[in-house]
Image (tube, rainbow, N blue to C red; front, side, top):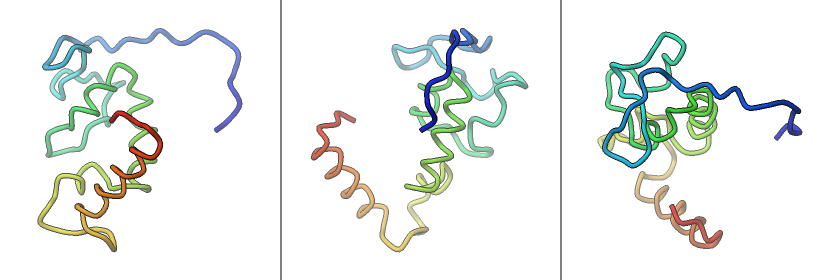
Length: 107
């Protein structure tokens, strides 16, 4: 991680953000502006974790860039008819759950 930079947060709030199915406002795909485009996979519904992070579109992009390399890409996550890694979806989830438990993560 780079060192923190001085300054204030941008305070940017996407114009299309509104209450959805969760307690945090988010952007639905049809409400994305040009500046917020590209945060959801094309042709597939966005996962709730993507929507929950959508108030900060740049973070959605950077988070899922890392996730795509360390876990699976957004399209592969929900495609249970193919295995894209050397281990199965179930094995990936088992490892993720175990690491989360060992690190006392609540997700």
